[in-house]
Length: 89
Image 1 (cartoon, rainbow, N blue to C red):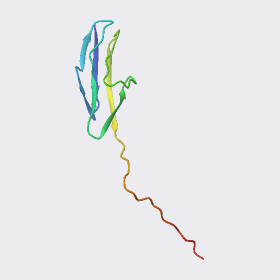
Image 2: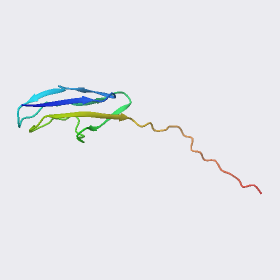
Image 3: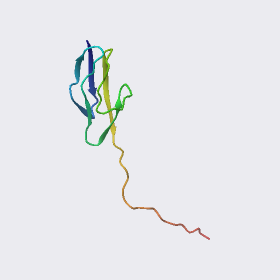
Image 4: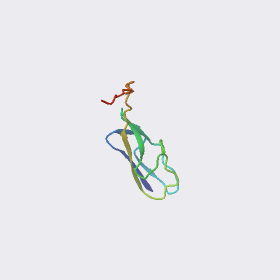
């Protein structure tokens, strides 16, 4: 049997079973990375961007962590800055 372990950094949580024991060649169950308010899911530490993810055809132990990052703030407001300058003479 193999163990699948899932963790999340401080900016999110996981839903699903975070520690799974599976037989060789079988699949784990789905796990979903849920970002905290103001953050978004980037990827898992093994570069997978599947969310939710289900590891299939498991042939080794696997430990991965979900990575979240701060959602960028888009400046708002209509201050178009349409000023002009007149050269002095």
